[in-house]
Image (cartoon, rainbow, N blue to C red; front, side, top):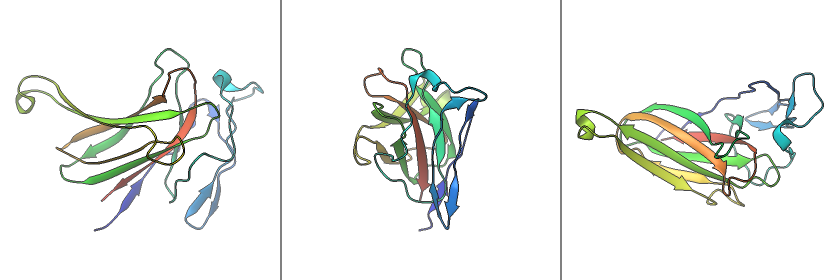
Length: 165
């Protein structure tokens, strides 16, 4: 079986600094400050040493929103049925205990004229307090990754790695 690693680096209105590439590994120093500001964004305290380790070259950096139930939603893309998928989520913020879910929906005739939603959820399987969602795609569709703080009390930043086999 071939393994393909997929990920994205995003800095939406934030200054994300310090990507250092050495071979197939990336080390990150994360600064979460709005461009031109010295204030920390949304009270997020960045940490240099993540709680767990994601190996491989493809990773994304994202933050949850500072609103009630500020779930971060990332599109994992369209996937066919029968693939083994692993999504590792790694926290980059102190006091941020991430939980993750991957969802896919069916609508219309194939969904019996209802919206059928399949959800895969994890809390701490990735090591420390980091989630690892591991599943086989039940049907073709666009899969979404949802990440939030377990208690919805803290805003935090994370990266994820999607592995499809």
